[in-house]
Each structure stands twice: as C-alpha cells, then as structure tokens.
Image (cartoon, rainbow over all chains, first blue to last red; front, side):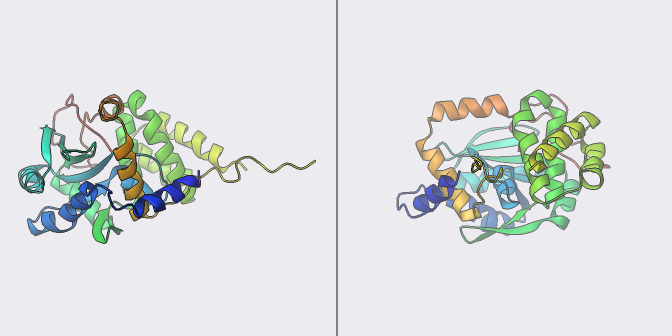
Length: 200
Length: 68
C-alpha cells in the first residue's frame, strides 16, 4: 500500500500531467465564488482530506440547486462539456480525459448548514471548502440509506475508516447520525465494521 | 517462532490533497474510459438529494444520477 504514496509523488513530478483537475480546482476556488456560487468538495477528495485514502474516478461538489446555471456557464467557458443534468445532479466531462466533475444539488438551507461547519482544504494551492467530518459521514449515511445495495461497498468503508481514524464514539457520534440520516440497520453495519478495524 | 504480521496497519497510506489529486489524475490517464464510465454507472446514482433535517426536499424521488 505504501507504493501509492511513492506513485503519487512520482506522478506529481510528471510534466505531462493533465491540467483538467487543476482547472477544476481553479474554477471552484476562484471563478464560482466570484459569481457568488457557494460550493463544497465532497466524494473521494473530501474523504481523503479527512484521512481515508481510496480510489476515485471523479471530483464531486455540492452546490445550491438554484445556482446550476452559473456553474454550467463557468464550467463550459473553462472547457468542460455538460453531459447531463437533472433535478439532483449535473455531470461535466473534461474533453480528452476520463475525468468527470459532478455537482450535486442541495437546498439553500442545507448548504448554509454545511458551510457553517466546513473546513478549508488546499488543493494545488487553491482553497476549497470541505464538509466537516460529521457532515460528510452524515452524507454517506444518507446516501447508504437511499440506495443500500448499490452504495454498500463504497460508503460503508468510508464511514468505518473515517470513524476509526478519528476515534469516533459509536454510541455518541455515529448512532445519532444514523437516527437522523439513516437506519438502525446501517448503524449495526457500521458498528461491526468499526469494531473489526479496531480489533488488534 | 515469532512472525512479523503481514499487515502491520490496517489503514491505507495517507496522501496529501495534492498527492491525492495527482494519484487520481494518473489513474484517469491510464484507465480504460469505457470501463470507467461503466463503473460509475454501476456504482452511483442519486435518488434523493442530501438535506439536513427540517429542510424541504428539492427534488422528487426517483431521479437518478451520480452520488458522493
């Protein structure tokens, strides 16, 4: 597993690294705020920020639902193509790359609450908002509760590793989140996974 | 005879955000695009947008899309 670190550092020095990701973070850190669009980084990048590194094939953000139009305009002006968008999410592609950039849409009040607790991360020198740990776990629990079978393999490890890494207390930290955003069944699964990770 | 455990730490290595971005970028450059698209279709969809309790939903149930 340590080879991931070596590979990442080697790739960091590769001159032909595609610029698409750098452009995405430039857009989110500078161009969207200039258009008064609030945005938080979620998905694998946010999970990595909070300490659990796993693979991903995209970059995910959350925006206020009503602000999709300026996001579309800025992303397309920055060279991205809009694949599809619906009530819940908009997908963008970087031409010539497999990179996909997704903007999940939430209501204003949810975004406001996320921003209150959000923390600042730096990616390629750009300041990006990331949800607080408990808010990110809440999203994962919510996602798991919406599409359990399909999301189990991805969200459960995220929740379990983040909980273990941050020494969260299952009863006082995770159970209340499951009561608000998920189910007792999800809590039981998380409990089993976290206890397994904590077993020497 | 004492043996060194094969896995000393069950946790994966920690990458900085820049290292992680480079890692993802490199994975994307070497991945099979069709398979990557197919993988995302299989694993991800959004039926309901995330919301904090007390907020009204912004979309009807049943829409599909991408998730976290």
